[in-house]
Length: 262
Image 1 (cartoon, helix red, strand yellow):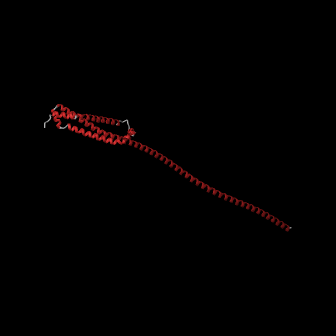
Image 2: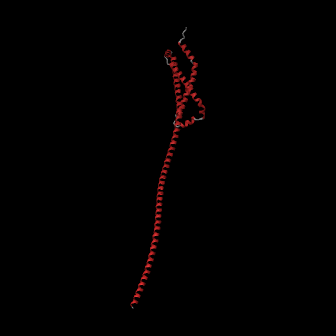
Image 3: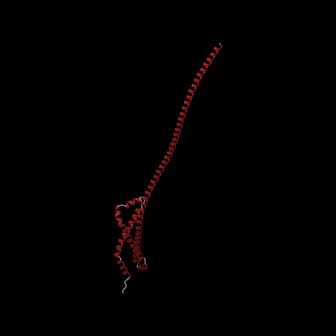
């Protein structure tokens, strides 16, 4: 078997990969563009003056609802593609970093430069695919965290509103309780006053009854006194009449005695 010279072997490898290198260039150009797009999107998502609620409103557009059924499939497909490209780039790096190509390249200076150029491209592709895969995962995580933050902020605002309403209701209830306490105290005072009035009314009624009883007793005593006065007048008149009769009888007795003496 006739051995080919090393230069012919290298030219064969270079010609064999020539058509493939064009495809790889387009392929990695697309991956690099995808990496730049990811960086731009992440920078936009991390802008401080755009709030999480505004991002959530943007994510709720109808276009995202239409793309939602395909989002998970596209996400997993892109991860698989990036992983395959990352493994391929890693294989290329290991291929051009091996000891055998390095020994062959040292014999030919032009081949050495060409080998290092291939190694540089492989490393560049490794970094591009690795960072694209990493930023793809980071971008999804950022979007998830933005939605969670917006939901948490909305929930917190709702809870704060509920707490403020509860505080206002509690203050209102406390004021109502104070008014009720004051009303009960006033009612108690009025009840006491009513009880005092009833007691006074009862006392007044008892005094009226006693006064009426005293009036009846006074009338009765007056009637008895009047009867006694009249009785006394009758006795005085009777006494005067008897005295007059006695005086007349004495006068008659003295007149009859004088006649007898004569």
